[in-house]
Image 1: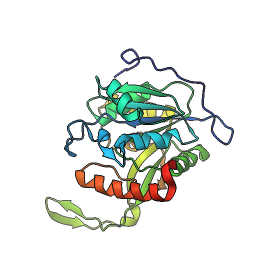
Image 2: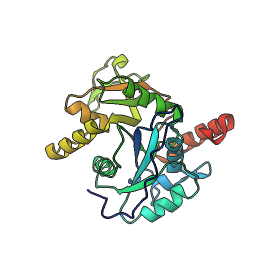
Image 3: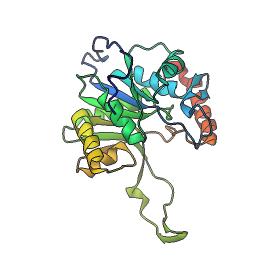
Length: 261
């Protein structure tokens, strides 16, 4: 869905410059359009309180403080742009420009809407779930640096090594126990070269291919994506019990680091 004609105009400030003197080369697309039916909060889990801020505001704050990021696109439901702006951005003091895109019927459609709404001039894009409030500036920058340093990569994603024993099951019967050394658990952000991920999304839409994450769309067309090991506490808040885990981790972080993330 194209969003540029249907959204209020958002002024794009002069291109942000990263701390080390180079131009900030990354736009972030934050997917905040889900209604969180499994979480059980009718307004959407992105608005639920986490340590004094709406859950999604923590992720927005982290990307605003990442030196590589020059622009933030928030994908939200149609009719809720003003609400999202007021509630998620209102409590924050941001240094990066923010614009909005309208979510689609699926997460994949919503991300494509966000990609279509990006301003020109960015080489890289980071795609992040608003329901992952514990992402750190350091992990954002490490993921982007991994992608930036290897021109043969199409993408790099935050992930952690699987530590549980895995079972391949048919019905309720175990078929095999795969070697967990080959398995990682994917997180976000997932970072990509802009032309590669835009093309991957458009081809997936044409072919009616649905992936479980954005990296799978790159993989589907033969591209290369690398995992960047990040902490397991970068959890996605999906169920009510996840919020308690996120709150404990956030309180511990705030106690040691303050609000500097």
